[in-house]
Amino acid sequence: TQLLEQSPQFLSIQEGENLTVYCNSSSVFSSLQWYRQEPGEGPVLLVTVVTGGEVKKLKRLTFQFGDARKDSSLHITAAQTGDTGLYLCRADKLIFGTGTRLQVFP
Amino acid sequence: GEEVAQTPKHLVRGEGQKAKLYCAPIKGHSYVFWYQQVLKNEFKFLISFQNENVFDETGMPKERFSAKCLPNSPCSLEIQATKLEDSAVYFCASSQILPEAFFGQGTRLTVV
Image: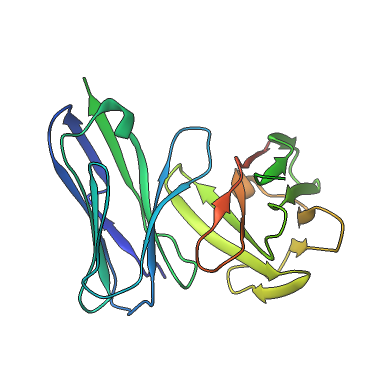
């Protein structure tokens, strides 16, 4: 049973556009992480959120943990081609989300 | 080392053969995790260790799959009598503080 559902599954946009990726669950988590995976590589940790309602920023990426700690979002402002990759959320029960594959075109 | 080292990078096995994958965690990290990635998206958790002890094995198939983390040796994941559906990329990760994890580059297993 997949506990973490991500949406959208695929996203194809042009450089400069904004986007939001969602990670949803019916379970409550004590923390949640976001990773990015590029082809041929392992996932790389972007951020960990631990407090309900917490917002963290990493340059053009904004991460939010839901108030009830059941969901999270990742917002990218003015996407660049270097943002292309597979974005994964992962919760404290070590389960990964279903993944969002982002393609940013020049 | 400063990164998780997985070997081999690629492994091809005929159906029914054994496959053994290795993982050297980052020095000082006491947690090791194994994941299976199929279809380029889905990550399936297999097993985790705290030092040489199994921490969580809820994702580990009961048959054919086994794993070890012994002192002073790389951790290993072994698949007996491989099947076509075992073809996947197997990732190892290590951690000093849960739940954050640092991943290796994976071992691509192809069963033919």
